[in-house]
Length: 499
Image (cartoon, rainbow, N blue to C red):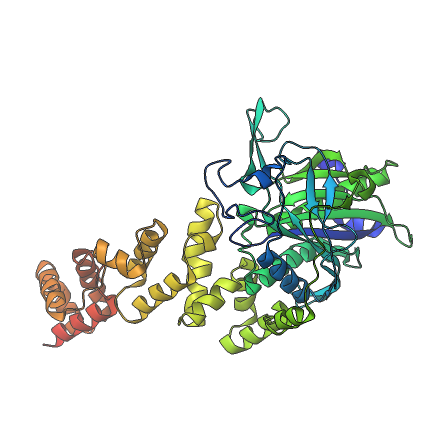
């Protein structure tokens, strides 16, 4: 769709009311899959983390992963949901190559958690309460790789390869009720909501929630209706949007696209759509199926899930602080200015900062490294910062700087070594020989050599032109290969000038 086919965003909001909905899929970080003992981890050679259960082979029977049920209950509670006294699995029937059984084991009319609410705070402090319809357990499908063509999608591909390693990984799908009243803030709210869900699941420890790995995926539903109309408009569902920024952009694009169609007298097709990060637009997928099309029926091979009330209360008592309350507390405790703290929130690195501070680092130093050098390295590689280095290693790096063992410049080199897999900060310092030279004798020798090469500098310093010391400091730092504390070198240069 060309730019001309999009309605101006402000005009679209004047003419139509926006109704949003989000379905967020959270991969649970269990050791094994939802219904089998196949290992659950990212990576591995294709089709190696599979069992007959995952492949739907005749005679194989599923067994529910107890830890996945516990994680699902914890997540439901954190979403403010009621936990069902009894819930059951159902077969969701559809035919696709990455679905080896030709059905997906999910939950239909009896989900594990229902009727909740999540508080979401926008950067300007505006708070929305997002109504949650349900959070249900299910298994993930496999992954298709389309080979050939220019887009990596099935259109234009020469053939497709299927990897069932992901098939059967436990998921919780969180479904909102229709979100009405966000107005112009709708796209921003979508991104903030997904960010809040990520914060919740990571604080619970139930998922790594790394969007670049597909641990957290969002389907964004958008529909428009004339102001004052009660009936909801026809919705589209933009599938598997995998970054906060993309959620915001995809929602905004769909608002403008649908508004242009409706204003021209057209109709919206109920369908799934694909988000294209490179072009910033969506394209049609397949007609969206309703529940009847999936022919749900109770899974005959699995008993209902009936969690003891004692277990539910135990998990309720173990819940961490809600994200909005946590942010308010941390901002006050850390003494961050509004813009400083918002910079952290916008970066999506709050959890990393919390863990780095818990490991012993000062909050400002943690903010500096995560939102600065680490974020720069991550952007250059097109990955999440958390995938490059652990909070513990960042804390160790900061401690080396604060103890005087490293300058900031050397610390950046150490960080690059850690990212390259060379070990902990201390191990990189040792292997690369990057520790700051703290021996005054070695520094004085380098200073004397520098002064000998610039005899006029000493006279200038003694005449009060202290800035002349910069030339000597630069020469010393070069001679020491950057492994000297510039402040200490300056002190020694001035001392030599007074001798």
